Image 1 (cartoon, rainbow, N blue to C red):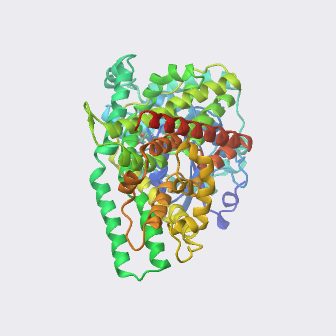
Image 2 (image 1 turned 135 degrees about the vertical axis):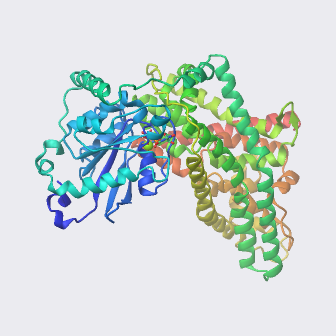
Image 3 (image 1 turned 60 degrees about the vertical axis):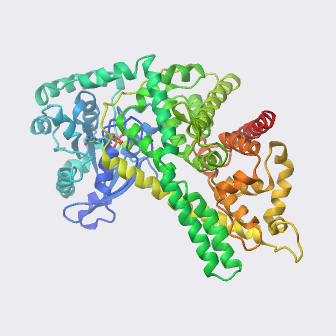
Amino acid sequence: MNAAVLQPGLATHPLSVALVGNPNCGKTALFNLLTGARQKVANYAGVTVERKVGHAKLENGRHVAVIDLPGTYSLHPATADEEVTLEVLEGRRAGEDVPDLLVAVADATNLRMNLRLVLELKRLGRPMLVALNMADVARARGLSIDVQALSDELGCPVVETIAVQSGGADALRAALTHALARLPDEPSMLDSPSHGVALAGPDADVLSLQREVRRILARVAPNAMQQPRFDQRLDAWVMHPVVGPLILAALLFVVFQAVFAWASVPMDAIEAGMGWLGQWLTAHMDEGPLRSLLVDGAVAGAGGVLVFLPQILILFFFILVLEDSGYLPRAAFLLDTLMGKVGLSGRAFIPLLSSFACAVPGIMATRSIVNWRDRLATIMIAPLMTCSARLPVYALLIGAFIPDRAVGPFNLRGLTLFGLYVAGVLSACLVAWSFKRIWMKSRYQPLMLELPPYRVPSVRNLALGLWERARIFMVRVGTIIFALTVVLWFLASYPEAPAGYTEPAILHSFAGRIGQAMNVVFEPVGFNWQICIALVPGMAAREVVVGALGTVYSLSAAGDEVADALLPMLTQQWHPATAWALLAWFVFAPQCLSTLATVKRETNSWRYPLIMSAYLFGLAYASAWVAFRVANAVGA
Ligand SMILES: Nc1nc2c(ncn2[C@@H]2O[C@H](COP(=O)(O)OP(=O)(O)OP(=O)(O)O)[C@@H](O)[C@H]2O)c(=O)[nH]1
Ligand SMILES: [Mg+2]
């Protein structure tokens, strides 16, 4: 039991408050507001799959630990993420006490569903208060809830919150201060049986809960309504079997066009800035290792990756808008039949979608898939969704080799990028299908996903999300990418070539020798030794390849000349077939250590990460080979 509760005078650690509620009711938004954290918030169920702790300061200056939990429909968990919630509530996590206070978060616009869990939580007999979230939406829809009556019914404080407005959690903060201050005096707390949660059998429970919910609703919110009319009318189009997929395709097109069309101005500016910096350093520093490290390593390497920040932000802008609008689960329904055909569970949609940002959260999100084999199949194909780390590589090669030409209303570069994404998705379908055939047969599980209401994306969420993305990218450039390019710079500069060496000095270095040795394996797919060198540090993270190429080519530049920017240099020096092969390689590229580590953690075995890297490597090599041959044959 909690020491701070038993002995109020000796509070050795801060009290803890857990946010519990249905999926998509705004727990994480509330958590962010209370603690200043920036956890992911999106308008669909199953966003949070792991418990997160933050710290909030209350009005009386006291600090509390706030725990954000995965959403759950009941206290009888069906999936791995719901299990996390129950574990925390029961204090079964190693080294963690039972939370001192529960904040039951309920979506005020959907009390019919949300109150059931609130009642279940209430039955635990633990100190609790209720946050009626989305109070703004409820008000806008003319829904009136008698907060006092609800509080009487539940026997605990009830406050309204608006988790997406600054100040929207002030009432909750005040209620927390009050409730926590009273905790130690509450005798029921100390001898309540709740520290081992006693749950009644699920079936009998559900019916009686349902009755109770209806009775309470009739008293506190007699005008509780169903889905708004606007949503129903929009859904008639969005979910239409013919119009729906057309809308989806059109949306995707716009996204990929925009990535190229909107980014050129800021990209040119960053590139010019980097070019200027390189020249300035060359002009103002004496020739020597330090100048080379800064110019060839830092500026040409890590700086070269920075150029792609605008494109990444544009892509994420669209992802965030789609996430917050409520469109994504609808797209999941549209694609459900297709996913069923290749043997994936409908539930795989959201994890696969998250993998477009990064496979790591995507693989974690598979926790919401009940069937283990379905989950495994989804984990295995998650790296085939084009993650944002591939974007710099794609953008570099497309910029260098695909002409900036219009094809009908579309731009050829945008189309190529779209094609690469589609190639990833199609191969994922094929791989999923083969895994299912060879390995694991399981019955198709239809998609059951709550459709959230449509919502105008909140500017605050968008701004926070974009800022977070920019920060993550800059931190990566400043840490792992920078560190790896420095290591590469060293390996590519030493040992120095002897006097009278006629080839580029880099060929005499460690990296040059490694690259030449690897070239034996990669020559058949059209890679040169420079690419081979870049692939090695690229094992850690895919976008490092761009920085590594920058450094390798910068060091290969003859004499004292400042190397040209990477992009025009590639256009000059590479055969287009090599670019095709490298693009095809990166559709599958197995290199990403954090993904493999996540697979190991989630599957608890080395077997699956090994299988994953082997099959990805095989596919990458085979497709690069084919692309190289085809490009040569058509005389690209
Ligand atoms: N208008 C309005 N929108 C809100 C409010 N609270 C949350 N939202 C939106 O509701 C959606 C869901 O919010 P989340 O915080 O991700 O919900 P969650 O309960 O953490 O969801 P899971 O992690 O999936 O269980 C997001 O689109 C939020 O922007 C609110 O008070 N008012
Ligand atoms: Mg959440």
